[in-house]
Length: 311
Image (cartoon, rainbow, N blue to C red; front, side, top):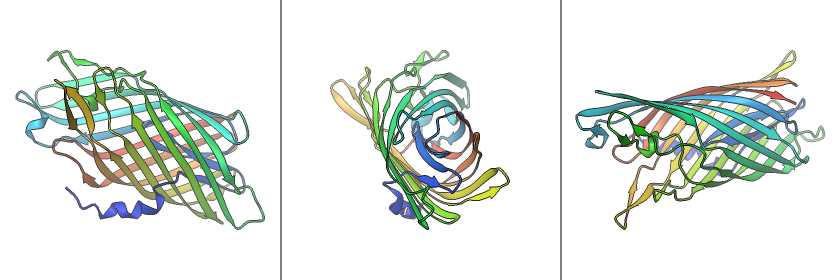
């Protein structure tokens, strides 16, 4: 287990999600699934886009990661989101995320793959403060807050066709339960430099198998630099991301058991491109520290991109 002193870097960012403003346009961020979407430009404009993310996991060599004589080695999970941002009013934005996931597992004696549409989520965000378009202020601030509901649309009882066993919850596409989240967004910027942080809390209900995913907390904090190049604006950034999951619980023979959970701290790097008609993001995360129970796989790296168009 690695030291956890890295997580204290994000103490000041635990209760904010970022909104970044520029002279040309405003930008905001929002959550996508469990992780955070990142910077979304042209605040107050409708937007449709896609987001792709690839993540790999390494399973430790313990008795908990064996199926008979076959040891679980790695998981590779790919998620593609189609998402929409719509403004019914100037201060309210609605966001919908429809994910499609492909999960692959490699064992010493077997390989497995599941795929399908995951749990669809809907969010509503309200603009509390926005001085990003004020030319009279050197220091610019933007603050949003809102909530989320995740629908149990993804399959969660997929089985291994070789062993005729149900895959573990961590390998399923969906959860089979509703989830409810709360988030808030804040950014401060002075000239071309700025800082933003983001946070999201999710609580899960119990599915029909009496399984309840633990409550989850995500928070990111970044430093960014904004630069205009002809008609395209560039925004490189780097920072820290914290993902904390409480243990899951399930009932068996009237007894409650707990499993999974844990915490991972990441370093995150990215660069965003945006214009008046489109936006693009490239990002990468690498783990800095773990605090995981026995048998839990360690995330090795994560990367992806986002592409969106304004209308």
